[in-house]
Image (spheres, rainbow, N blue to C red):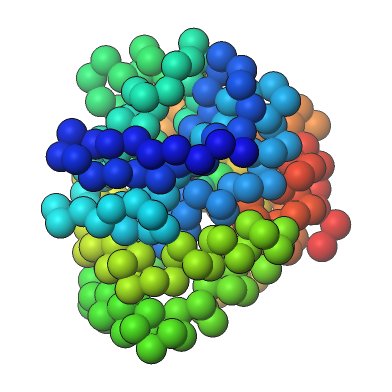
Length: 268
């Protein structure tokens, strides 16, 4: 595992983790409130065939905070800055949850789709969430998240989300995403969450796109993501061809079972 920093145009340092040495680069974007090591089991599984890179967004881990609004354009800037510093021939972007809109925003930029071979959306946040969350709910979450970090309670809410990770990944991830700096980044991203999703509505990636779903129908009454309207251009092939993963545990990419066996159903 190689750790390194990438410096943005405004001189912020972003902490990155790389495994593998192939000329196909797979860049992993974490969901809201998560960092690079969330992808640990997946990147190690793929490292024999791909160069896998994940990174901590601004404010997480050793990455410098960003004083600017954390819009999708700003987040996509950071993503493509990381990509631009890594030699590669083929580029695949993978995004989980809020990471899905980030990689879609990057791909939608003029001229960028020619540089991206494909997208993989893992239980992505999508435009339908604008009907599920009220602005006041997210506005309330913002100061509460920072407060929880200040009084050392944020880890209690994050820990159940990463319980499937190997111990080392889990320890590093919790240390990187439960600080006050990380909480402020979450708050900043939450501020832009709904308006940015609305702005993304109808934006097509124009590259091959795979949707991977681990959602279940019994989580808060939400429909399984596989039953939702998919982002434009997304395929919905079933597990027989390795394109759609259904995991009954509801953990997400951090599940050590489906995270390391991505072409079969989790037995949970």
